[in-house]
Amino acid sequence: MRLELTRRADYGIRAMIAIARADSRLPLSSRRISDAMAIPGRFLPQVMADLVRAGLVVSTGGRRGGYRLGRQARAISLLEIIEALESDARRRRCVLRAAPCGLDGYCDVHAVFAAAQDGLLERFAATTLAALAVAPSGDARRAGSLG
Image (cartoon, rainbow, N blue to C red; front, side, top):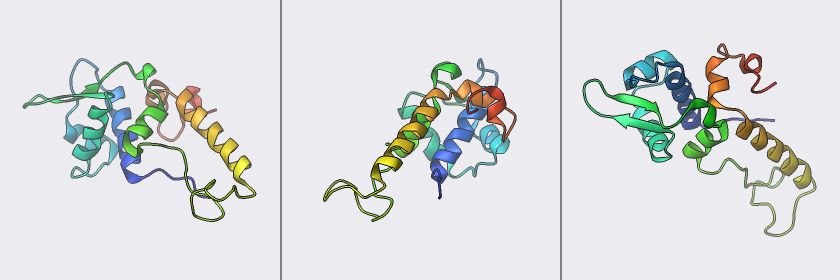
């Protein structure tokens, strides 16, 4: 079973973590975000524009400009970040038929997958950026966010 984020969401989550880990009084430049999180510089402006539009990030122009969080990291959920970059995180296609489920009935596993999806979205909503930012890379459980 594959559970994957788009590259855009991956980059956005990593950028948000970099900003949350930085000194909140100073904007973090695109280059510093890109370097800290191994995000290709050519993709970052598009990703950041979506985060700014969603109000998750504030952008400051100029030589000392960059990005700051739009609100405190503990008030930003992982789900908000994903939805700012992927619109709706809910799967719309049937897992068996590769077509929208419900148009001509539901597949035999619809209820099971819908419940699992609801659980996943609840976990994303309960996981804060603050919890992700304090966890060592690859160990978000220790921060109490995913475990």
